[in-house]
Length: 258
Picture 1 (tube, rainbow, N blue to C red):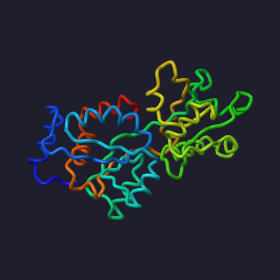
Picture 2 (picture 1 turned 180 degrees about the horizontal axis):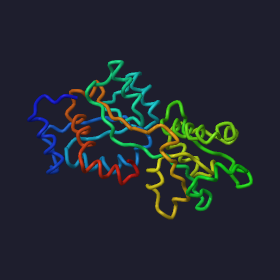
Picture 3 (picture 1 turned 180 degrees about the vertical axis):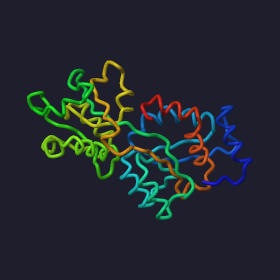
Picture 4 (picture 1 turned 30 degrees about the horizontal axis):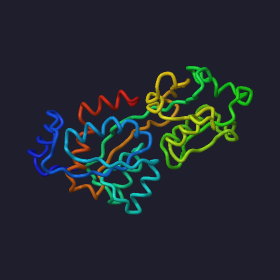
């Protein structure tokens, strides 16, 4: 994503330093955002809108679903995926701006239960087996084909050599948000979700969780990219700059991302 001049870049940087409350040329940016980032964008959206004067419209789904929608002509300006693969594929296919992608967050996978003592800090609840005796009827994961966190969950089970053993227990969410709801509702007793979803809960409702070691799965590198539709949209450009600002990065880290 090349700016038209160094002067324009300087203005954008200044925008997120002095935090103006209006923009003479306010526009709207429509962002396709991976479901795991929904809670974090709620923290970032009012800050971006206040500082830039632009309006941010969001649409949340699994990265695979959003990728398909973009292919079908959905009117998005930017894409915040939960992986690197899909933004790079869009660039390869000529649907996104070649020099625009960057990593905006690195996700953390956790095994979570709403029950406070079900999961130990080492994740031995999975290794021990005898799940039915512990009241575990279902283990939720997001769809590995469309959700990067689901793919990471399946990789973790492969690393632990538990893919076959857990198959009768596994239930699949369309995205990480639905996977989270399976556990919240009690339809699943365990679920592989994003750490940010646990941190968003009140402390009294965080239950128990195991932070999956990063060595057990491929890194969840979440990439943002400018889509062709947004290439001449100053609001889209400003939003991607905002995500790379120190202020935005600090908020993203507090929400459970690396």
